[in-house]
Image 1: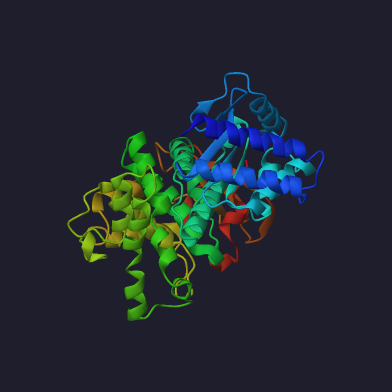
Image 2 (image 1 turned 90 degrees about the horizontal axis):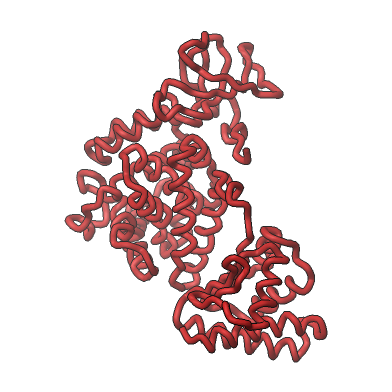
Length: 445
């Protein structure tokens, strides 16, 4: 990438921001600078689909070029980013003059700081410019925040595919890295988050939840860190091909006709075609996308994948896909409880699912997985919020209903340990109690 081209873009951007002190965003002078900036970015985006501009220890960089030497425009932009509590911008192929104007206007008008600025930019419909907020490292690794980031990443990827563009893999790889780390340190929190369902955007949230659950399967199967990252990325991208299927078929309320199901069977192949074009995506990720419906006995689809799939990560993703589908409400199916889903996984292992991987996953979840609503021997009803990774009989429970069956105003926490008098006697279907268990998780703690 030409250094002079990079410097020109930095120069024009700094000048455009400075010019807003004299001219309005819609002034001809500003419009000319916007055009120059768009042309400059267009030139850089001929080399890559996504250009990163940001800070490294207070110094501005654009892609591989770090502005170590005196360059006033770079200093001005570094100062701007620091004052707005941002670590950088991402400019994507296809950005428009309108989006550049929106960015300049937001900078000129204030637009808040940090994540507020990033959210304000996104709220204006700007898809091809992303502001990256500076965040505290510890806060950035909270499970709920990582999950939200994963949702945003999938949103952007889906948008790019719908627009006929090749999605960037950078953000997906980064968020999967965080998810993989949390799977090892806070598996109970990630399992709880995988229970969140957006029924209006099923494919959207399903992608994130399958990634979370696949990582849980991988952890149970003792995968290495690198294998987990590959598995998580495959889970995140596994259903991309559905974006090339008629939305009326995808969102049809009820069972599909044979003809409609034949169309659906094309989505793994479509997805593999999309993923193949993405940068830094390994062949193993493509296998996951292509083969996640192939089944352990190879009775699934697509037929073209039979004989071409040999990665065990494909089988692990299939288990995650099945578990999330089972525990999700459908127009033709009540959601399985976690314990019922485990029973069903066992029933189809050896035919549809890899038997050894199912055993490992089920044993890691424990008799009553996180998210199970359970009845205790004193008739109280509570939610399993944590399962000990070393001894799955040791669980934390949030009591929701008292022994008389009354919903508590303030749930209380207990730990079931060998020296405690309480024990679980049965699982309870949340639908019979009229509650959504996700309402009782402390996702933001």
